[in-house]
Amino acid sequence: MTSLSTNEKIGIKISILRKKLKYSQEKLAELSDLSKTSISTIERGKSKPSIETLERIAQALNIELKELVDVSKIDL
Image 1 (cartoon, rainbow, N blue to C red):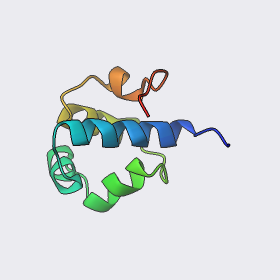
Image 2 (image 1 turned 135 degrees about the horizontal axis):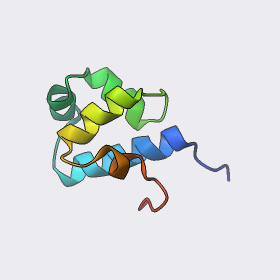
Image 3 (image 1 turned 45 degrees about the vertical axis):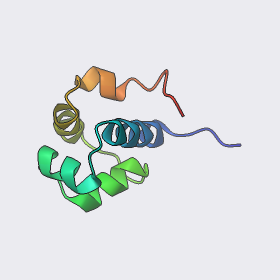
């Protein structure tokens, strides 16, 4: 089994946090001023989001950026 990249782990974490808040990808996109396609691509680990983009997502999820990017203890 191959290990996940950091981008994939961050994407999974965003997806988990989004679902805990019962947000659709559309809702998260709206709150973070991004497109639904961007959210989808990030969640699938297919893009390398900028710090600014991650900050906007973190704010939309009501968490600190450092909490969002800390993938050392991700619940898969």
